[in-house]
Length: 405
Image (cartoon, rainbow, N blue to C red; front, side):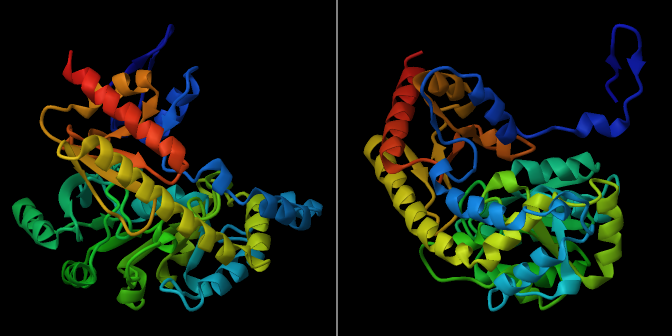
């Protein structure tokens, strides 16, 4: 533990305080708010302001929030109108489920925290993709896990590398964390074969698969894959985390956990020690939005627009970086992963790029062991095509400027 000394005393921090690494991604929001010049923002993984269905949400708010009871406490497992609307929304999809498996959460992050709280003891081995979602690995570290990073390629997490990592560790993982569809940050999706192999390994090892899938409904190309939730067919070892942050609006802070019914009361107990219940006005608003049938029309529009934005970004990257970098080709979601040669340090590049007027997240942010010094993540979802073209041009100028130093 690193003590914190105030003017009058040294605070007795818990040993886990040293492991609270936070999120470079979330911190970028504060950093960008401090800037006074024009910046093309490829950093935060968020829908664009114009992509949020503001009119329908305002309409839902007028309908759903007219009574005083909308501002009361809610049942910890979730408000019944939202639970009912969510079950109806998921019917017929790869995430179809039953009421006893659902717990409504304060966004996807609370779902990750609940999983870590229930399953991770200090020193437990947890495998994470490499690169991986920063907040997911940070959550495991906060519960004093020992992390093993598993490489990701065009088919998602390498199952062969997972086996090898477990052999080297000499013990099986307590938890396997994965973002299987349009992965954050790479944009890649785990192939069907690997999904099946992953579930088989987890069953052999008795490991929990933490299935984090915020982007699965945002497929704009290719063939749909069954979710890990569907492939597991109710296996209690698969713990699925979902959110409305990417498909409606992140500020709602509403998501859900789909877990074995045997965990229901434990999840309630754990959540009651966090926030008692998820924000009730937001739950009512989302429920009304779903009941009104807005979501499917909204998703159709967003899938089309995100495809257009991805293609604009890839065209701009080809114009400015052909032969100088490579990048992924996602079939959905929000992100491209760009890889440079050894001559480009993306952390050193960041300040140059920010001064030039473009922001991104450096690759090392997505690896606890800082394995990606020459890579970066770009979010295409948050920026219209004309601004994407300008942002990539600014990035090219920044790379050129750094090379001349």
